[in-house]
Length: 344
Image: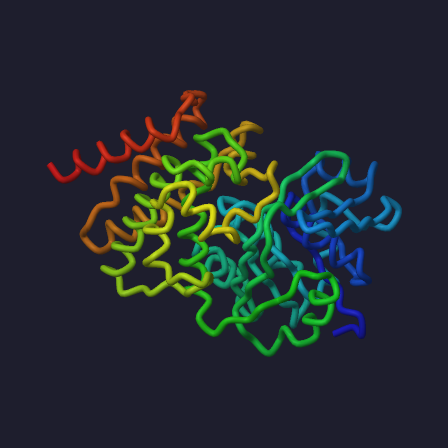
């Protein structure tokens, strides 16, 4: 490995540009591979990385090494895969003939199984599961803004040692876990809100400040926790409250929630979920890899998950152009009806 390891971001979207941009802005050697639209934007404007706590970093356009082709992969020491989950197999097929021996891959993607897909396509390479706990929104002209807090989470492995300093210097951290699956499920429980936020068509902070929308999330999380219990899966404790008590907190009155959940509401007032971004841009969402994972696990264990199944159905309708102007109260009634219909 080179004395200065080379990092390649494969999938230069909002997450890829933000994570890779912060690494590049603080001295790491980073190359980006992305689609033509983002490549053209970054070549014209460079990268501007900000967060809700006041971080403000820039990488001039002349210093950003970004392209649409995969040539940069041949010299990569570490590849950060940040494509959408549906593109994981294609990504693995692109990486396979180009990675040099010893190159390490981290999947920083939503969903539970992307690293496993990559491992199957990249025998002989170390492929690790990672997780990005914060929200990133594209602001245009190369500006990417993180609207919530959190450090990068990754599967524990000795091969990460040469890279830890660069991530720490970038202010991203690289928290390593022995049981990354438990962490993934804990993150997925929170990401069940992505669909709700997309249907609400509200900023995250505004949505979570309204009890009706939180009660919808409590229904989805409670159902998921019951399925996880049936499957013998125990999600990690990522907050002061254990996962099983979070739906109770979500259902509390606004005044109580505002006091007890200050950290949960510590979000940029303009931040929205990535699923809202996808619907707004006319792209296919990742609902199958979030709420859909709960539905699949339920079926595997002989039970149903009507609330999450209904949310998948509503997002698919929205993808097809049938986007309804939901209120929290109306959607809550709809989800409760899905539960009752399933019981009957």
